[in-house]
Length: 306
Image (cartoon, rainbow, N blue to C red; front, side, top):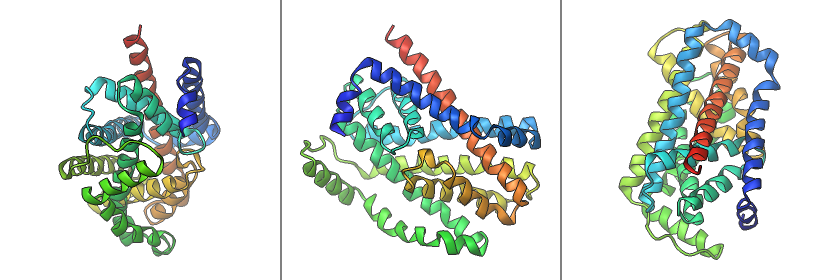
């Protein structure tokens, strides 16, 4: 990690990283263009626009959860620079390896005078918050979904109690201190507080609700019943798919894994063909949201340094 951080201090390496990340995210869509085209033809334009708007808000609310951790650890960065730091670093998740968003966050944060170890720690804690709250929401999908969902993914929920304990500030602070000492890094200047973790968790739960509503609009447009039960299931399904996809770190941004999980959970709601359209449309809209916000952040960052 230290060598990667040193490498990314070169301006040309930073530009190359941005280009590669954008290309990888674009390829995630272009490589399945025929299916993407079929998905759009099956959805009403207003549904696509509304689902895309929710995808944008979902990313921004996820950023708010991350920023709550950043503030709690001692870096109260204004919303503009914080947004640029988060949105640009998120493009790194489309590159294979599972660490590039951490590397990007550390290096961009250094430009804002945020210690690199703090930037990496913030990203790791924010991810832990997302996983724990996501598993909590995913209980709905596992309990209310088809039997094969419980058979395939029920074991993932066994990690929930352990991960929830890790979110307790006394436990999490000791774990972070141990890891920093293990890697020969100085301790954090500001420990996590219960209020900070609670705020980040509240934002994360709101993000899952928005993602679920985004998927709900798509599946109801494809024939699922527009009921609260369907809304609950789509919310749990998205959270379960994201969590399982994240654990498969060798796959860029969970590509393929999340779609498979969503298809299984939605099998009782829509036809198999409609399920494929729904999961593909959701993936494309979320990717375009990341791209759009990342490009906007890159332009703002370039203007700020001009």
